[in-house]
Image (tube, rainbow, N blue to C red; front, side):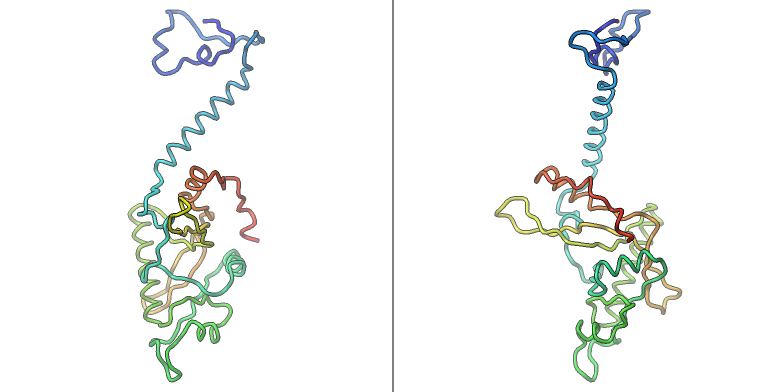
Length: 239
């Protein structure tokens, strides 16, 4: 079958193979004909089309409904732990150096001889090397760390997935001008919570996986707001 570089002549699509005559073959001529398309360009077009299709299939696997808490962030008492200190830059620097990061543990009761314990008190007395959270009692902090660590261990054992992350940055967005504002974490840094015994407080260390941009947010920004984050570099995170 000889044809001047039309894609259908180079590679028969689905359902076209049976249209070839016995003994026929597909041939691409190494010359240019009028209205022809170079072979290199044709191959690139195929690659780009396949790439777009794969991306479309991958996007269909991302839950864009309100059940996706990475897209529609909702704080919960026992599965969310907000870090007040250090700053993002200092936290990433400490994490990239390796080793374990310790949490500051408030008093066992949220009331002492000076009154109710507060986040401000934690910031005053906590060493700068420790992670200060918004929890104001030891029991509350331990329960939250225990719940997060247990859920992460179950996911890893059952599905082989790393599901404990530190979320950095919160982008406020809305689908239409009159809609309510939504919040979505921008970056997820994989971490591990571990402890030596049941009596010890969990420590945080970085996991082997690389940080990832919020996939659901990337799809929403690209498809609904024409904002592309795919080329955003994460190379400087460890510096």
